[in-house]
Length: 175
Image (cartoon, rainbow, N blue to C red):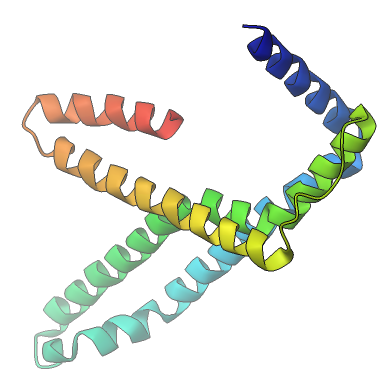
């Protein structure tokens, strides 16, 4: 129990350092901003080119009636954009952590200095840290995708699935 209390004290000390150092707080927000801009830019590009993309994907529909061809391509475009938005929301945290590794390492070093802790390097170079970050990000995305698929399947269970899907989805998201 004493290690738990020490952890709570360390958390409070760390939060105090961040709140007293607005530059560190802003530094920690930069990776999330970069991730958001990358994902929103990618989604915007997909939306912009979705007409060309759906036309390329459905050459078999060229001989169809105008309303059927357009209807199919609009539905396909909406599905592509929707799937990209879901994938982006699932991968946002993983991408932010991947981009933010060096930022968060710098913040941790500054916090350790201010707390008078050992600030010696752990020996991991940039390439090793990047590899760790990529591996952790891929694990996070894989868990999120598997969880989303399982929750989707649960949602198809008549009556109980709609309730269980929402409750389990909230619990999974919180976890």
